Image 1 (cartoon, helix red, strand yellow):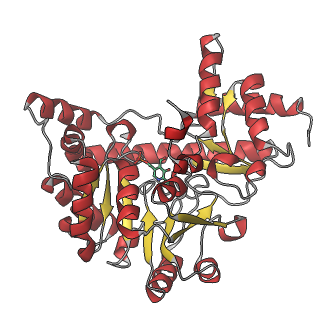
Image 2 (tube, helix red, strand yellow; image 1 turned 30 degrees about the vertical axis):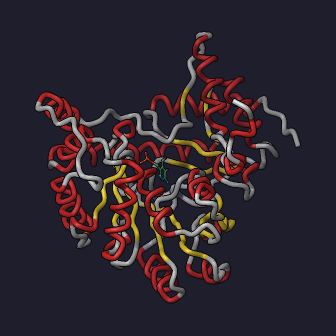
Length: 393
Ligand SMILES: Cc1ncc(COP(=O)(O)O)c(C=O)c1O
């Protein structure tokens, strides 16, 4: 295809650098090297058996046609009950829109809310696809540098200082990717009140909900009926490949979101929805809670190990399965550092450049999606790697 046929907006859509590293890791594996994967943001646990069996049952019963555009009513009821019983949040089933992953939820919400001449405020570092979703709308991302001083999160003060008239929405993620850090309920309420006052819209990406370790989990939906909340079956429920998520929308947005969902997706995946009905069974939740406890052990283990090796981790991540580490004492180019670590020691991690521009060359992300034995092996290899690694400016 001729280059001129590719829309100009595609120039603003960058690939994941980590995909490059992943391709190289696959090549190394094909040559017989045993690569330890700490780069991909996906739990290593299998989908719980009850969910798999429910999917098989759905296929046997011929549940393979479209559902309504906003999803199965009975799944919305289950999610609504889950908000009440686990998080003490009253979210009516009618306000829940089932989507193809959090990715579908983010695209739907942003498309309904943002005009082409408007901006969306977000944190740098942050989940990279967000700025690309905004780019697709011919709108612009206003990325605000966040540092360890604010736990790598936007705060009430940062939002107030950076407010502009043409901001349509603010997008935050708690816990965050790549930093695993949280916004607590007090700060969240301050942010909600500020954005309300500014007549903007707040979107809170809670895709890592359920994977919170040191404090009680909550949803921004429990603080205000005006917030858009994004969630997914991908992470806590270990269902990345099922492509299922959801969006909580305020009353007056139900109709336009439904209308756009009809056009964008027709419907979320049917078999996945029937499978997800079993995700909230008490036995399944027990399995998932045990997985969360296992992730917590890994977090403590890897944090301790990395700090001993000299990695600078100034904020303890309270959720998700990521550690965001400053490697500037080892290198001035964290992408090259990741590349060297992969080729010399067969440990794959993600460079900061995948998550934004602010001090991206100083940071790397570790995903503790491998068991403790594997993490120990990774630490041993990284230790050997560092003992021979010469600082190269
Ligand atoms: C913060 C964040 N939001 C959204 C997504 C998209 O997830 P999915 O579409 O699998 O639900 C991810 C995936 O890693 C993420 O980290």
